[in-house]
Image (cartoon, rainbow, N blue to C red; front, side):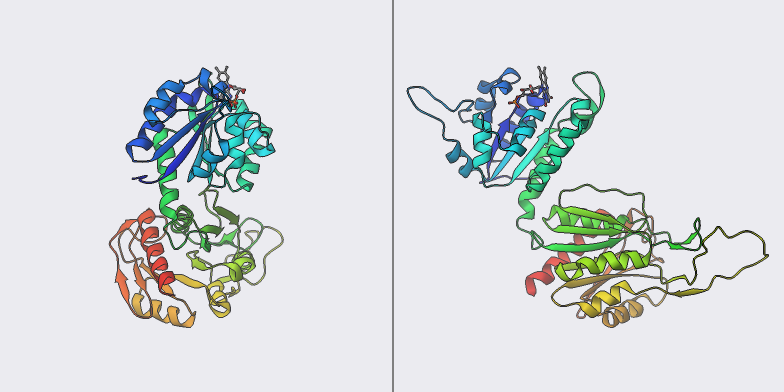
Length: 400
Ligand SMILES: Cc1cc2nc3c(=O)[nH]c(=O)nc-3n(C[C@H](O)[C@H](O)[C@H](O)COP(=O)(O)O)c2cc1C
């Protein structure tokens, strides 16, 4: 990972995790970043300006005022930066940031900046869980700031829980990915991804479903978000969870609910990827009460569900539309037929005949089919498959 040519302004505040900032600054500098450190007056109690200045190879500023009537220009430093990182970010500084307080050099610089802001909060257990901290983190997200969540573990107080500042290598990785995403075609673009199964109710306790885990769709959402896309992830029932400032997760149960959520955003997105395994049929009648075991056999009449992918295909204007096909026979012919019938730009074919591919697995083996070509990939983790799919989407965006 190289930060060559990147100017990073690190604002250090008065938390115990400030001791990790020495390592972080050293690592950024090692990767060729230009680093300017500013500290709050309290931060100096936790880490020395001399150490940070030596590691960053620049003077570290802590006060507005220098010697002999000089002052340290917060405006110049704010406009110099490609990125601001507040680390560790105390509850105190976080509260000031979201309320526009300006009583030290760190705050004045933060308020004067136009560049992206990353916040690595660090607090003791109860401070991190406090409703005011939660509200302030939410507000910071609404400002468009990127939160690097605190990690779980032993805290300086001896308590165990969430509150530890992310490790320097994690912070470096998050910021590295952010800079890389700026080169992506997907950066700033809106993308809709469907994931998981749908459950079609038979009665209040039973349903018809399938074995989809949602892993493929969630991997796609994470990768797209890391490339800078704004992701709406509509997922059927799954045990998976995901947290990323660029991902809005909408959980649904049935195909009809999924259709409603999908069509709510479809017009406004640039790309839609339908990886959900939507039930083709649903019970015609849902029993209001639990069906009793009175008969030796009973029949459920099924009716066709709405075809979500086809509906998107019919309403497609500027969007790149990608579908998934999971086949057990005549794979290629069926997938190509679906590409055409549903007006797709690309279809991802996975076959249950391939070992390691399909539902529940952490790996997948795919063919990417467009009108003009078929590209076959090796068996890979779904996180890597997500990259292959999005690389293909980006190539298409570039040629559009
Ligand atoms: C030993 C010690 C450790 C502290 N650790 C934290 C911390 O991890 N997170 C936090 O939000 N505040 C912590 N505080 C409280 C802050 O130092 C205090 O709120 C201070 O006013 C922060 O000022 P600043 O945000 O301007 O740097 C700690 C205080 C002490 C004395």
